[in-house]
Image (cartoon, helix red, strand yellow):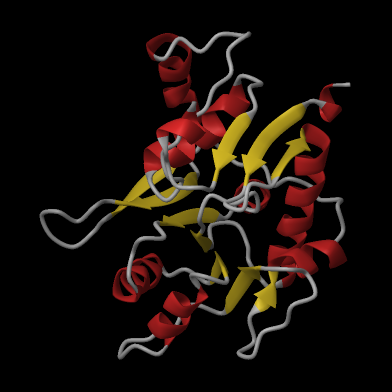
Length: 240
């Protein structure tokens, strides 16, 4: 059955490999949409993601969009002030991160301007792990949530993501990407990149930036290809 076809292939930095099928991603993203709903997130609210290339990113993304919330991608090489600026400027109310990047969120909260809109931080960690400052365990929360969720109906012009620019000529700006972005990028995947039915597609760009998020992670899913995400730093041997 189509629901049992592999949709996502990942390899962690310690070399562990795994996959998610369509069915698994549906259930996990439904669970995350319910987690966000229980935290008070609603259509149009901003949810940030300070993710390395880890498998939690795709269930989180799909859950955010099923709810009609807006994704704010953050690059893990940013220092705390850059993270704080983007979270504050976007008025992000919930952010998801991992244990390695959690200190940046904590530092941003403690900065002079603080993060007044940020209500909750979810941390990708072993589901039994607890945190001292009220952070929520991502996998623990998913395990406790229902896998049934009614997807919010949106239009092509509803906001999908706030993708912040590099800020090379001034303060970084949040580019407003709408749901038709996927349709705009689809011809690029099919004709410019010429991805075909029997191809294996892997894009190594970081999902903290637009090309890594869309062209390399979510676009392949639109044509039924499995997205591939490898956490380890690039080496020629690994790529080969």
